[in-house]
Amino acid sequence: MTDVAQRNDGLATWTDGLWEAAVAGDEYAATDAALAALDHGVGMETLLIEVVARVQARVGQEWAANRITVAQEHSATAVNERVIAALALHPAARDAARAEPGRGRITVACVDGEWHGLPARLLAEVLRLRGWRVDHLGAQVPTPHLIAHLHRTGPDAVALSSSIATRLPTAHAAITACQATGTPVLVGGAAFGPDGRYARLLGADAWAPDARAAADRLDGDLPAVAPASRHSTDDLPHLDDQEYTLVTRSASRLVRHVMSELEQRVPEMARYTVQQRRHTAEDIAHLVDFLATALYLNDPELFGGFLTWMAGILTARGVPASTLYPALDLLASRLTEFPRATGALAHARAALRASESRATGPA
Image 1 (cartoon, rainbow, N blue to C red):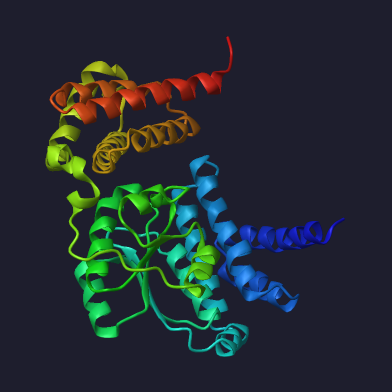
Image 2 (image 1 turned 60 degrees about the vertical axis):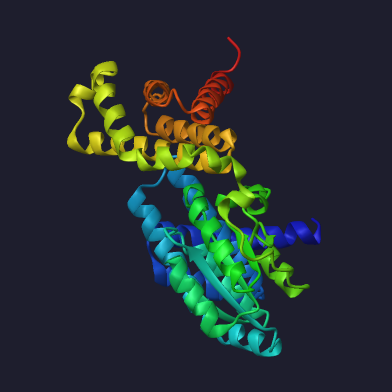
């Protein structure tokens, strides 16, 4: 067995132990597992990125596959947050930070509306291990508060995190506002795409796929700040057609229309419980939100990708993915004067069909 294989097997042991404790909601056992890994020579940064972060990724995957409940997902996430807090206070973390002093100062925050705070917390702790002074502002940071903090503290850079693509318009505003203070902006998180395509589109100064890559990027030369005094239409001239604005403003009306008409097209809805109707309305609201975001970015693939992901979620919960087609039809019927929106809806329909074909295989 190679050294790499032995190392991976060793990490898998600690990852499995932490997973079992986290999904059981046992923060004491989870913390014990993490501290035991340290005692057996696993480095603090490796433990955070290759054990804790992987366990958290598995939490999301297991929820999507309907193998754990929403409550279990929340509980496991809370346990992982407590584990990170325990590791951050461990003498090994303090010793590592003292060994690399004076790197500079970084502000780490989630964009407004982004409640997935664990990725940003992981980055904050990795940066501290590398000697940075870190201001970790947490989840859902309103942009005016973020800018006030930058004026007060003058950090060398800002690291912004977002996991949900519908937060990208808000992220765009935060990026340009931070740059207007003369502060370079590094972004990360699933919202920006696996290859960082939306980071580039929205004018971020740098992008990183994970906490280690982000720390490496900041350890090198800090990115140059993009030109100040930019506006959204400078990066996204397609916004001039107002489709994003008009769809966003009419979102609640679109949801009500689709819900009302679905009752005529899907007879089974007459037997829905109050909870089922609420979940259906929430799903439709998500559809509209992602459609609006696709219009903001002028990227139909974002909407198509979300629709196929939602189809997988519904299928895992015993709801046929075909129930999405009437909702797409009803949205299209209300947006006939919006060519980019109707194009995105048609693209999503084709993506859903292709996904169903792959799932069923050849006839």
